[in-house]
Image (cartoon, rainbow, N blue to C red; front, side):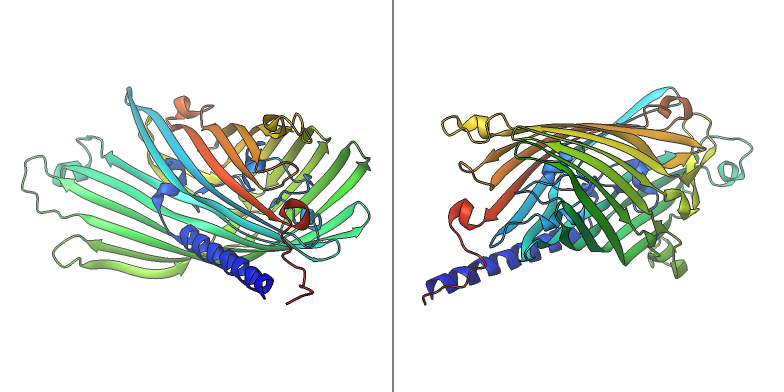
Length: 459
């Protein structure tokens, strides 16, 4: 009876964590990102994967490691110990630093945030068949910008109204819920399939406030609000093949394909005069033409008792959106810029070193140390100019006990965007730091003698 109660307590604990994490990730908040580049579409796309993979530059399509949840490739779910259960939970803090030179004046802004990053669990269903579930942020929106209309004596707005201040702000996020199966079809070859559900809310606000140059203007403020409601299901397939497996080394290749397709968010738009009655000028609800990209990712992974090396190439066809938008005035020319979705190419590299995985006496030698590099292109161009992106990562894993899988993970990431064209065309140069902590909890007979899926012989 005591063992039965223990299993119920564990199950209730897992359900509670899932509920709390799902609600926390579903909250719409600008603290998840702070970037003017999130002004368009569904915002900034987050690096996928648990902290271990993100600390290795995001590389892990072919990674196949006991005691790790690899959310990049559902084929990896087949590598799960029987009578075991693995849970991964993480949090992340971010610091955004934006800089732009406009009219010869350098302008800067900074913003800090801290939030839940992911929740995932992995469990066996049958021999060589594993199931995984995860809740992770897919994209984030957060920006606040102000712009004063340039003086132009020939402009009727200036002549009849005066100086006009424009304000733009937005916040929100899109969350990905994934449920996947991985099965070892035959020795050294595994297939995986996953269903991905995307949902979230994004709020964008635009306001125009005339400021009379003589005072006492009768012109009122105009405000526009748009709410994006997203709810769509997509899919992913993948494979992993151990092309070389010995007692000392493992070489694996892997690939995934994300189906992509219509996102079609429902957009409610209202424009109203900010008077005593908030008089509505216009209001409607439509479905915006927007697509999630098809994605092809291929990778290779090599590991020994000390080393784990991973490299990935990722392609996304964002250009299939076919949508264009216009920015506000360019900081250099004063003219509007055309924003267009473009295909992206990304290279990711990562390494993990564990000096003495089986060292009994020296605890710190059982720690794992990670580093990674990622570089590619942003998914939007500005007047045909593509923005380069890069990031460097570091991390470490501290196991709870000897020969144990449960651990605490720490990671840091430094990234930058737009440095290749920002000065020339007047865009924002962006830098960011991310600090993350994650917890991996593993229950099995080999780890701590907890039997999660074994029926007791005695009551």
